[in-house]
Length: 398
Length: 79
Ligand code: HEM
Ligand code: SF4
Image 1 (cartoon, rainbow over the protein chains, first blue to last red):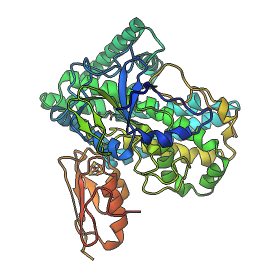
Image 2: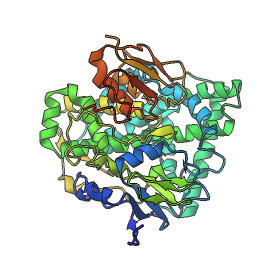
Image 3: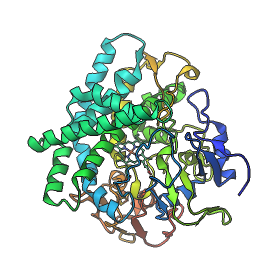
Image 4: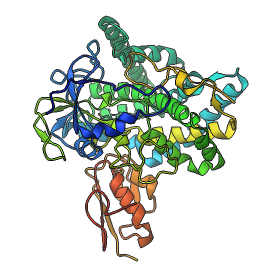
């Protein structure tokens, strides 16, 4: 192990919607010593092949609460001592929820998504220019979709957004405010679930209530609420940030934008490439705890037992896996990026997020052929002190 | 025809739905969202996409066998 000073994490971004070139040489150190925003130590695994393999390695536990380094000094984030995130227990629980994310179920939502997209873009078209893409489109779309899927009343939006925003603070809010948001969010969900118990609807919360009623061993009341909590957060925050950064990265490259506009059948591969090129996230969401020593593929480096590990999303830029990784190639094939993770914690909502990103990208380019960033890419502002990177505001014109 | 053989592990499938989107003529899902192979001997012209499906599976739940198909997770030269 090198004795060099740990690198501050998240790694610094490039000023424009570009990936810093230094990410392509991260692999020179298969295991990078880093310092989390909490100030606590961790390791970043940098090789794509190691990351992919270790996502599926049970020696890296996702039960990190109380034993791993923390992401934030003021917030336990997703850590919950009452939830077992490791197999075998976790698999039964996850399987209950995943029925709602099969290709068939996601495709059944595509028409709903199309309708929401068209309505939001009607309003954007009728509104002032430049428009602010995050609030006009990138946030409301996944929020309305996840509300529809879960059966959350859309008028609750301002309430749960404020609470979730507080819940996801890494350095922005003091510990007592974070705790207050966490508590109020949990209470909000208790009320919501109670109202569904009293009056079930044609939605995922009601479906999960029914399953847990039939067989509480598969999904306890607490686990049910924990899943609803996670799905509502993960269901829009990530997709909104990704949609925003996807558009920023794309519109910052007028040739790629023109190429895509000229052939909208490229939307699925472009969406995939923009996911690979993602700049909305960091690897903080992949926090793991090593329950044993784990050797890396270079044959010499070992993750020491008891250490905290991040599986790098930055490995989407590993040149051993991706040709010309810094080039945004909207026709890229064999694009097995790790933006949704891998292994048993592979993103539950990946197919939904993809479908929303496809519909959103297609409709934006079709309806606003002149769409462009209204400020230079270098001037786009990133949010401060939260869990996700992304962009705070994306002014666009057409 | 019939030289390729495909199977998938329902138990380790995590419902990523990736294989179903890539090759709906070969992969489907049951009511719980777990993988089901609907064509166990798909035609040879699907070889490349099958190897991509195998490589893309987040839990390595897909097996493809047949002449010239390596069994390493890198998909025997899928490009
Ligand atoms: C572009 C958007 C999204 C990105 C980039 C993303 C990314 C990720 C990643 C990397 C993980 C794995 C974390 C780990 O390994 O510990 C994950 C897990 C998860 N995601 Fe997503 N996600 C997105 C959208 C969604 C949506 C729309 C939903 C729900 C509707 C969702 C629900 C979840 C859940 C529940 C998990 C935990 C799964 C588990 O631990 O088994 N995500 N996501
Ligand atoms: S790609 Fe793998 S995990 Fe995803 S649905 Fe197919 S078999 Fe299941």
